[in-house]
Amino acid sequence: MKIFVAGATGAIGRPLITQLLAQGHDVVGLTRSSEKARTLVEQGAEAAVADVFDADAIHSVIKRTQPDVVIEQLTSLPKTYTPESMRAAATQNNRIRLEGGANVLAAAQAVGVRRYLVQSIGFWAAPGAGLADEATPLALDASPMIADGTRTIAEIEHRLLTTPNLEGIVLRYGFFYGPGTWNAPDGDMAHQVRQQQFPMIGKGESVWSWIHVEDAAIATVAAVTQGNPGIYVITDDHPLPVRVWLPAYAQWLNALPPPRVSVEQALSLAGEDAVYYGTQLRGASNARAKWELGFQPRSLGWIDDIAIDSSEIDIERAKQWLS
Image 1 (tube, rainbow, N blue to C red):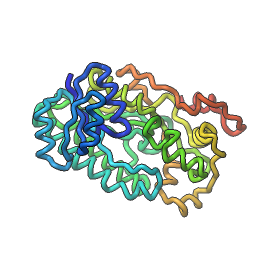
Image 2: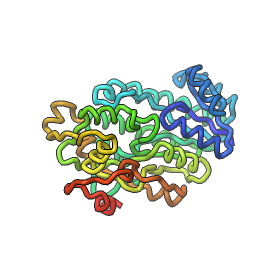
Image 3: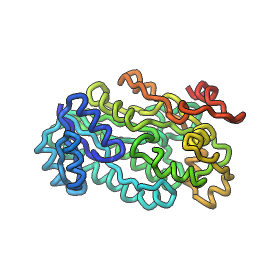
C-alpha cells in the first residue's frame, strides 16, 4: 500500500516512517527541506518537497504520488517546553494544522485517496470523573491558550470526519515520550527537571496520559489497515497524577525531587496554562484502540525502571485506581 505522510520528519514522523517501511508499505514523506528530504531517502522512503501552505504544490505532489492513504502529522512546536515558548509557537502551530492540514486534506479528497489519518490530542478532554474516552468532549473552556488549541483540534476533527468519500480516522495521542521528544533524557523537560525548573503545582492532582512515540507509530500503522472510521485514543494503560509521575521522572533522571509551588505562586510565575496542566488534566482510556487495533502499549518507562520510596506515592495503588 502507498502511504503519504505529511509531517514525516517530526518526533512521531521518524518512527512512523520506520514502522510503515517495516510493514512493507511504499512510503512518501512530505517535507519542505531538502536536507530533511535526504534523511527520508536514507530511511528508505520517497521524499516529496513542498510547502503545506502552497495548495497547488500539495495537490501536485499528492496527485503525482497517488497514495492509498494519507497520514497527517503536521505540527510546528518549539524545541523548548516552557510557557513562553509554547505561547510564542501557538499561532504558527494552529495555522499549520488548520491551513496546511486543509490543503493536504483537500488534495487527498480531490485525487481519490481512500483513507486519511490525522493527529489529535488525547489529554485535552473536558474535566470530569473517571477516564475520558472517544465520546468525551474537548476542554473548550480551559485556560486561554489551551482553549484556543482545543478549538483548533475540534475543527480539525470535525473537518475530517465530515469529509465525504473519505475514511477519516482521528488519533488522539497522549503526551509523547521517547527519542526526539521533550521528555527524552536529553530533552528540554528533562533539562528543566534537572535544573529544578519544573515544579509540582498544588497537590499534583492533574492526571497525565502518556505514550511512547514508537508505540504511537505502531498504533498509527495498525489504524492504516485495521481501524474503523472515527476517533481513537492512543495512550498507555496507566494514566498517572503529577504527584506520581513527576517525582519518579526526577529520580529516573538522577535529579533532585521537584520543588512544590502553590497554585497562586504558579499563576504568578507561569500563568493559567501551566496551572491547568498541573492541576486540571484528565486521564484517558485506550480501550477502543486495544480492542479494535490490537494495541499493546508499553508501561511508562521511568515508573517501571525505578522503585519510588515515598509514603505519599504508591505506584501500584495509583495504577489500580486509574485502570
